[in-house]
Structures are given as structure tokens and as C-alpha cells.
Image (cartoon, rainbow, N blue to C red; front, side, top):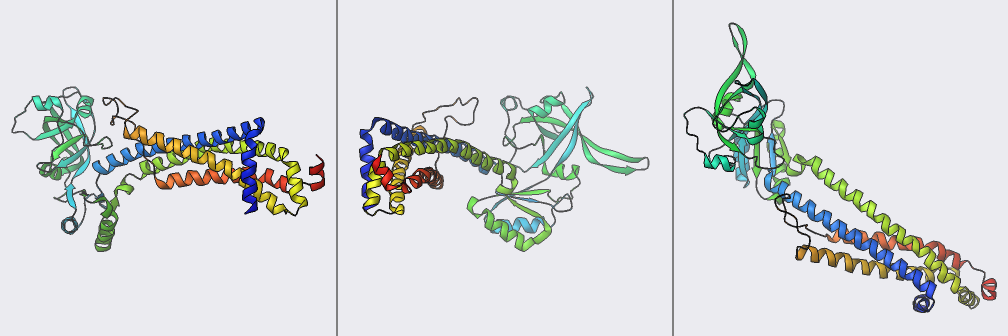
Length: 396
């Protein structure tokens, strides 16, 4: 089209005018810098969020079954059997809040107690591995923080008071029991709030669950979590609550999403400011080309044709900056992730380097926003050029 040819000629000729070329170069570099910064930042945030989500998926169940209207799960055996048929690794357990006390010092604190199955004991810290406690007394595992909170250590006795009481001729009496601390354990994940572990029979007896679990964890194929949830809900209805890993970690997932949106909007302001430079750049070009615009109008060019010419000029500048920004942003992010260019101390962070990851969707959104802002910024000066009076323009 003739408009495209004229737009390309205007762009090519603009390099000969120092001030016009300078403004065009500033517009291109501004857009490129904004696009590159936004892509690099999104890649960094996506990489970190991917690591966080990966840890959540690895350390939290794909499905969690919890009771409804009571402290134990009804039809637990049926749910376990059905879930196993669906290929899930099913782990029922008993958990509750108890009071842990140190009688010698008269101190105590609430403890979240959870049962463990044989072979699924929590990991020990280095001191527990070096010190073996052999005893016939009831045993309990405590985390280092929980033990320190009540002034106890490996091998000491702790008094656990249940959140219930039993009736006697003298009135209600608290249910309590003494346990020997035979292991200082580490929580299985950073987000888990378990303070103490008991074996399954002791936990069921202590919390009076009648052998029924208070929750069921299910592990398996992540992609099948929603399908398994749907199958369990359709079969067992309101017998229990069935939550996927997304629902379990909903606050964190929403926080990560909001963080990405806020960062995207904030850094997009750089692109917005760079797009505004197009107004001054195109205005200078129009000022230089006023006689040419007048000539085009006199030989029959319409307002729409002139508008199209300068819109294509602005689009050419915007595309050049966008492509350059994509090359720099994606290239730097790829190289930083591929060659681990930004290392981190492993004794402080859970990763050894800053990861970068870019989704095609994010790249497309960034490019669409940049081109859209470029067109919006171009429209006003292009509209002014299309309305120039041809006689006045030629005389100038």
C-alpha cells in the first residue's frame, strides 16, 4: 500500500535529521528498556514462584480429607479403599491440640500433636542420631522449638494433657499422660506446624477418636487431583471435605498471584512513560514533514490516509523497541537461568541460584501491552497531522 511505502520513507529519512533521529532513538530505547525490564522481572518472579509451588506440591498432599461437623472422619475406611483404587497413596492420621508441660519447672505450652505410621517417623536431627534412647515407657517425638519452649531435651519426660476430661465421683478430671522424649525431630516442611508425634494407637487413645482418623492425606499424580476430588465428592457427598493442594494453600497461591499482578502493573509504567516519548518524537517528525503532508493532501490523499501513514510510523518505532526489548529480556533471563549467573548461599536460601522462567502467555501479554500503548500514544499526533490544512502546510 502507498501509505506503508510513505511511512517507511519517513522513517528512513528521519535518521538524517539529528534532533528527530535522537527523539526516535530515545523512544526505541525507552520501549526496549521497559520491555526488557518487565520480561526479566516476570521471569525472575515466575522462577521463584515455580520453586515455591514445587515445594508446596512435593511437601503437601495433593488431596486432604477433613471431617465435617465432628472431629473424626465418618466412612474413613470406605474413603481409603476407594482412593487406593484410584491409584492414590493414602495416609490417614490423627491430630489434635494438647498441652505439653514441664512439671519440674512449672512451664508449658500448647502442642499440635500428630500420629505417625510405622516407617513414616519424622526425620531426626543430628543429635538424635548420635544419642539413642531405649525405654519401655510411652515415647513421644518433639521438635527442637517445642522442646526448648518448655525447657526439655532429649531423654526428658513431658506431661501431655488432652483437650478432654473424664468424669469421676469427684467431678471431671483432665486426661493426661507422661511420655519420654526419644527423638528430636524436624518438621516435614517449612509450612507444617506439627510440634509432637505419637504412634497411631497412642494418638487414637489420647484423643479418644475410636480408631477413626481426623484427617486423610492423599498423594499421587498432580494432574489427577481434580478428577480424584470430583470422584470422591460424587461418591461420598457430605461425609467429609475434600480439598486439593490449591485449596489447602489458597492464601499463599492468591498472594503469589497478586504479587505478580502488582509487579506487572508497576513495571508497566516504564513502558507507559517510554510510549509517551513517541508523542514528542512523532510530533517533531510531523513538524518536519508538514510541507510533504500538504503536498499529499493536494494530490488527493485523504485524512484517513495521512492518519494511516503516521500511525504506521509510530507502530514501526514501537515494534522496533518491542523486538529489541524481547531479545534483551528473554536472552538475559535465559542465560541467567541456564548458566546460574546469580548464585545464592545455600546455607541461607533453599535454592543455590536465582531461577528464571517465562511463559509464552506472559511474553504475549507484554508485547500486546507495549504495541497497544505505542498505538495509543501515536494516535493523537497522527490525528493532528491528518487534519492539517494543505494550503497552510505548503506555505510553511
